[in-house]
Image 1 (cartoon, rainbow, N blue to C red):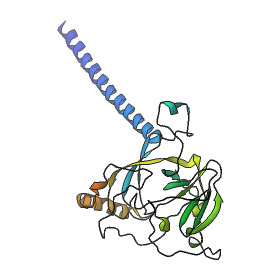
Image 2: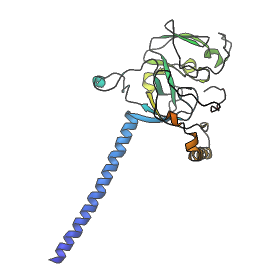
Image 3: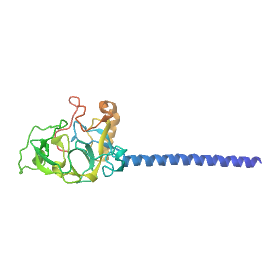
Length: 264
């Protein structure tokens, strides 16, 4: 009798252990599924590698992108109960670069489908009306003339159009107009390539990232630099900074910006 009781007790313990292990496995599996679902359909983290959106988004900003706001095809049956809406002028969007779809770009929507875009002496007009753009930064005082003989990017940088935005596409430009590779040079952004809207900066680190294609040692050096300078180079005032369509940013302290004038 005693043996049978002991054997029953061991069997129960084994069952409990297996049940506990299975519960942990199921919880982990559910967590992984939930995280991947959120990353694919709701929110995703991105890092700002260039200065084309300064001063609103800075090099080293780590942002959360709202992938749910536009929905899979914009407005849909959930629009009455969920915060789903179409793309609007002024939205800062993250999208797949049309010429290299495996690369993500971040720009501001300037032209909607059907809009006529024209740029004269750096000033943007939409449908014949000058666009009020307090968020724009011009680092180069030079204004290039309307001269077809000029090579790109100079030919289209300060003088462009008139150009009509095709259906289901958007004309996107960087806030740092003299350093931005955008729709002036490679065309509009198809609606299907838009991933979401830049929502919030959750961390900002003042550091130059290695250029694309750098060897692993450069990435390792970047990681070491983050560990060493986490506290003194983190832009604490930008933590949980909400990105919106207005001129809303925190300026760099004098001498902090280290990027030379260039084109990105």
